[in-house]
Each structure stands twice: as structure tokens, then as C-alpha cells.
Length: 287
Image 1 (tube, one colour):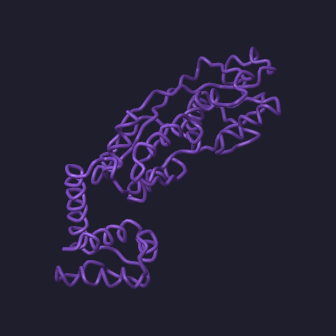
Image 2 (cartoon, rainbow, N blue to C red; image 1 turned 120 degrees about the vertical axis):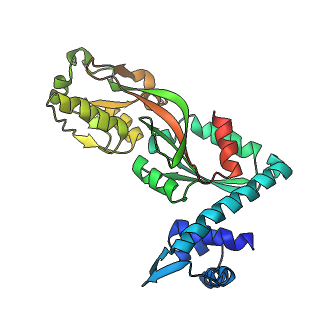
Image 3 (cartoon, one colour; image 1 turned 135 degrees about the vertical axis):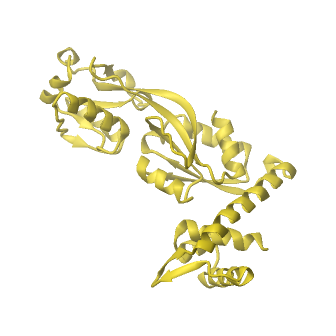
């Protein structure tokens, strides 16, 4: 059995597209088609069920996919016993939420690259839901996010740290006027989009009081929200690390409201079915 063909098969399944699999592996599409035909001939069964341009795995294909993951994982473990870390040649696909891009994680990624120069790092930024889908479909090796604790049988979770979330405004803002959630109805709010975990939790707290927040600005870019706070009289609700990393952080005031107490987990998610050697090395460094 050719391990390269197994890798191609796994890539085709994960990407749900032969052309994308071919591009990611540096093959021509015709090469991928020939390899998949060879695989079906070797096992004497139909692996794919075609419907027009799309396809699904047959029952035999699903079994083969699980075996392929196990075989490739065993191969990587064998390499781990024989090949020194410094000589490892792999691509590590990391998913990350936007707000972590300028955090200390950037320094850790640089340090990892220096320690393991043969490991190529590819970064993907998206929402938490999108990253979980990418992880589940093996488009990324791991995801780093800030969210409520995630308990999912599909993933292994590693807690890195606890992250506090506070209201924030420019120092010139009369923050003493904000004593309860209802006071937020009378000030300009600059908030993250509704799919951000801490925005969802804030909306839940407000919903329990019968309050619906109507921000004047919504953005997924936390750096933009901080810049807007410099330009106008408004309030935002952001993780402490976003506020503290801002170049002008001393010009901002963080404050709490008694009705809102939100702490999130900075965590790594990995797929339980397969973890590359570079994934394990990276997670070990972050711990």
C-alpha cells in the first residue's frame, strides 16, 4: 500500500473536492483521479458514491477512511521515534479567532518556527463556529480560541488560560454614570458581532433583564473597535487582552457592571481522530 495514495484519499475526503485536494498536495487533478481509481482496484470495492460533480463515501469508503487515519497516525508516531524534532518537515494548519492575532500567540508562533524550521505554518482566521467546522473536516490541525469551555466528543481541549471580559471606554467618558445594564441604553455602544462568544453572553445577561442592546457600530475587528473608542464617546465590551495590548491602553478605562461577570477560556481544540506530530509539538510549547 502506498502511503502517498492514502494521504491523497484522506485529503479528498476532508476537502470534499478532488481539485482542491490536488491543489493542496501539488498534484494535477488527473493524478488524484488515477490514485483514487488505483485505491478502489486494490481493495476491490466502490469507495465513492458519485452524484453529478459531488460525491459521498460508501460504507466501505467510510471504513477505509478511518483505517487510513489510523495508518497515517501510526506512521507519524513511528517517525517520531526515529526522526529528531529539528528535522521534521510538515505543514501545521492553525485556526485562530481574529482578536488573538496581535496577542502573545504571535511571539509563540515565531519561537516555534525558529525551534522547528522545517515546519511550515499556515494561519486561518475565522469565527468560532467556522473554525470548529474546519477542524471537524480536517482543514486545520488545531484551533485557538477564546470561548466558554467547549465539551465535544469529537475534540480534545487544552486550557491555556482564563480571560476576563470588561466594559471599556476612553478616559474622558463619564464612566461613573454607568452603574447597571439599563444605563447602556443611553450611551453609544461599539460591540463585536453577535456571533462573538462574549457578545452572546452579554446579550444573554441583558435578555434576562428584558433589555435589547442596539449598538451604533458592530464589527468583528476588535482593533477597529478600540480605534473607534479613541474617536468618539462610546463604550465597548472586550476581553482584557484586547484592551491591554492596544498601544494607547493607558488612555482607556476598564470597568465592571455588577450584573455582568464573564470569564472565558483561552483554549486549544484538536481533532481526536488524528493529531500530527507538529500539532503535538506546538500544543506542548503553548502549555
